[in-house]
Length: 102
Image (cartoon, rainbow, N blue to C red; front, side, top):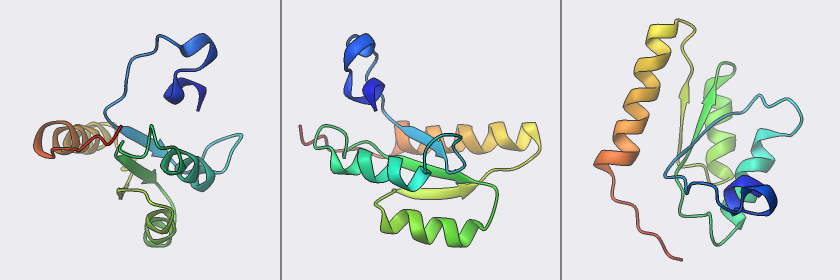
């Protein structure tokens, strides 16, 4: 969150256009991170795509309830993974026009 909010050591961090996040984070609950991002006025405009390998449908429904923009399954194959990530980037960074309210 410090990086996203450009606090502390990250005061000069680049501004993100998109957040891709795996729900299976090591130290925190992915759903809580989504909620924290969407609760911040300065961040809520950022599209957040949930990435998951397990219980995909259940994860998408829960994540969307917490205001994620969308979700997708992570392929195991590296080439398929790179294609999925490239498609997500293309969609959110080239196709969609995002209104920034801050």
